[in-house]
Image (cartoon, rainbow over all chains, first blue to last red; front, side, top):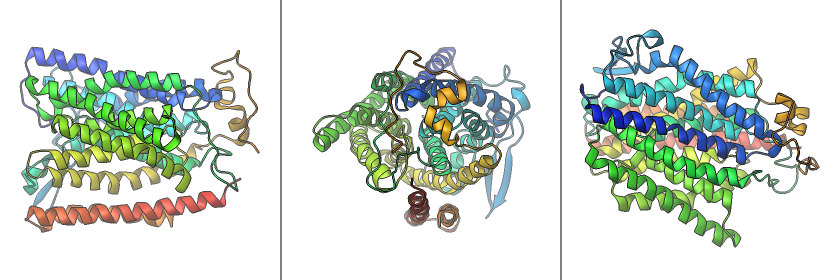
Length: 431
Length: 60
């Protein structure tokens, strides 16, 4: 199924979009740094290698299997069934191994590149949530499953001319589900995967002792985390601009607003988190501010093309206030051990961004379309991901054994640490 | 309990889909879709509680 894109694209716009797509992996690099910095020092090498391995696995699996179901390139008619007299395009049918890539329309080629980056990012998000206990082979297996079957389904529905992209034509909703930067298809999907992984692997040993509050296990390198946030800004700008051109047919005149809104969302969010943590703890918290910054950028991926700068500021402030509070609620009240904060910074911020796009977009019917998309993401993909990963856990156990967790993932899985000259500290988590 | 919560969530999705088919008025559609999201939130809440209780039982 050919994506719903115009047939022609000028050479200048093609070159601009390609340049933006080449910059977009900076988001992946930034999140890799954040995932590693928020984990413990004895798992740093395994974490960074895992990030690289997941990117590689998703690229290979998506090229072989996922791109067929995503229907990114013109190929078959797609899998359509009819219900209540309406066509439901639910699965793509692209050429095997991307045959005919060179002769495909320019937009389809670029759309495929976008999806390669998107699937890597979606599979990378849960890696930080399973830090310090999720085995490398299990992380790669999960990435393969996500890239082969789960992400292509979401990508086809949203970007590949699937039923969510045709809501207005088929149901007269007034607008189609809009997700230019991948708030739903990448961040909500990745966050749901993170939640499923946390439920299946369980908390880190010693995180929630039998008595008393949860044990604080701060990240080992705040510099990695904060530098990762800065790298992410470039990546998210590129991501949002490329998405606006590819999936919303944005004209060059609207691109500066998209870029400004992206920056405003992130800035407002970190300012709000800075204020909340200063009030809450007496001093600003670096890792929570990083999560606030990320939540603002993630929210912007849904709405930066649609809303005004004033609305972008408001969306960022809400994301920035909610994130540190949610991190506390998830850990202290709900016993969810999420070292990288993916659930608050990706899942919930992504949902908020999608909803905000509907609330603040000037187009009539956008709110309905956005909430149909949110209902689909939550109602279909969380149960699907959980039960598929639960099955995968039977064949490839997710959790490392107790000894491996004690000595650290670096020594256990790789045979050497990231910082061999450092003194190994006593493990406070074993009491 | 945790699996029951997760199995309730697709029901919310089906409510949202039913809204598109059954109603023509956008306000009615939105109301029904929001009800679907609310059902999903309830299912998620039950699942989270189920996992939380299981986690508390396994604390070391």
